Length: 276
Image 1 (cartoon, rainbow, N blue to C red):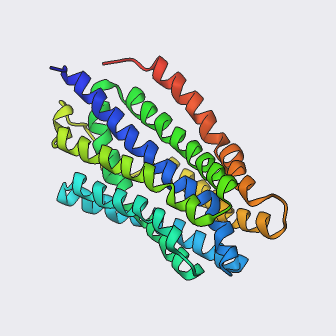
Image 2: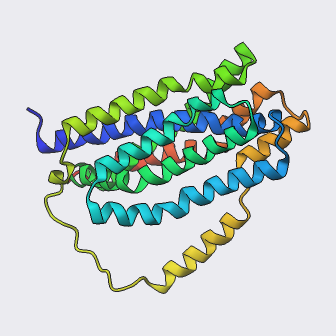
């Protein structure tokens, strides 16, 4: 029998596997969706609008889902629904033969991520309360970013070998299925992860400090000037700057360079975190 701390660690690792597979799935797709939209006849304006709308939904919906999750306490059900939409939408992109269909799958994928993220983080916090919050969230983030780098590399390899967009999206069904299986195993083995949290957190809900609003304004300004990779990929392909198979490599190398740096920081975070 595992100790309570050992069980919590196993739970955190299982959720890390789920996130690793999910990131490999949707980040792999994002490395090529902008190019494929252009191949299907979409303009640069359409690519920018679709990518921007997906991100807007993906972040704004989280506030609603977080509220609903706390009200219903249905963390597992909402998390499972979100992951299913988030990952199943990706291999279905292989069936898209019109840019409108591909765009709908892209928005569905972002919607799924918005649905699953708030309740998933609540579940993760329960396990992290036992193994150390720095260790728990650091380990999960490191596994998450490994998947985010692996996905575009998989897509680049498949496209280079086959020269087919459909196969490049279809192969992502493999990490999607593995991730969903890991999620179902975690849900079956740990139906009540709230039991890991022995002492409820004492939260101050009387308002937010001024520093928070200044920080939020700064983040909003950064977001307003942010260009999504699908639009960058579209212009790279239209301008013949790179071969199509090289664009996912650019995404893995350049766009995921910051997460790789974060992985190094997470490793240090894990190593230096004190275990309770």
